[in-house]
Image 1 (cartoon, rainbow, N blue to C red):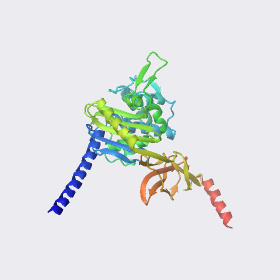
Image 2: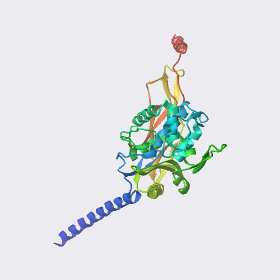
Image 3: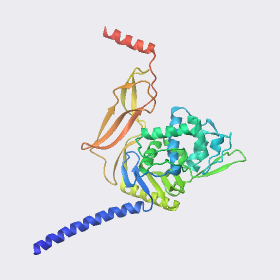
Image 4: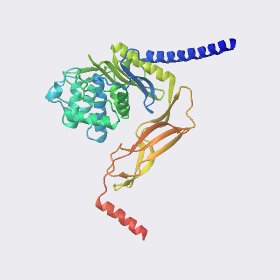
Length: 388
């Protein structure tokens, strides 16, 4: 009987400790995001999920929609379709947008830089539509591009109906998808030159000088926060996609549906505190490092550098060393011109003990045009003469 009693109490202790562990885990989850509808926390370089709460639930993103709007603007700048000093004219339709705005007048012109300031800092709906019309000709065409880009990023639970996040049917996203969009946007490192500003001005040299104040108060009150985008509607409640960098580690935290702005900021703060206290990023490669060469078929050059499209890092628990890992390059063997700068042409995979720890795209260093018939002729003639 004593032996049976001992076994019984041993099992009871094990189950009690297990219950305590589960309870402790649940408490941690609850403490990080207690009254939001959905939340996620990821490390930017690896995409590793550090915390998750209903992150695949479809919800209205409100003005966090502008994360995708800004991504397409930055991609248009990178491709040369736009320049920062280029003038953008506000249409009657753009100027009619309600909600957050910079009060564009029909026919008013601003530079792309100023429009981007209005979107990034003041969440300007009118500037968002004006930029959409500038890039795609109409907001509808730009929205189609937004949805196409979402599919390219593998986002299965996101659908856009406008560029602004104003309430409408079938306009939704998820915390997970928003984190992926933010990760992609942050590949354009200059975006934080806009989103980190707490205040700025538009129309400075006119009588209509307009003061911009960042809707994301954490850029002022949480060291390291330098973006990205708030959101609020009566349906969506208070939302925020935030990013912060400390000691070489950048994280992205997303909250959907907090009851107040104070609660929203508090939950983001807890997630950021948790990430920086528990984890560390170990940099392996910076953005733009050449890691290999890829042969190009029928291009005006025979090969092109494959370079990192974003920082490549390893993530560990705080205090752990990043060692005993290996890197593997997978380069496209059937690359044909034309190729756009930044186009994915390979991958770098980080492994430890045969297990994949991280993966990142390798991109084309520059544009490659199709070779002319004369270039192909000379190339063929050279091969012919060498073989004789």
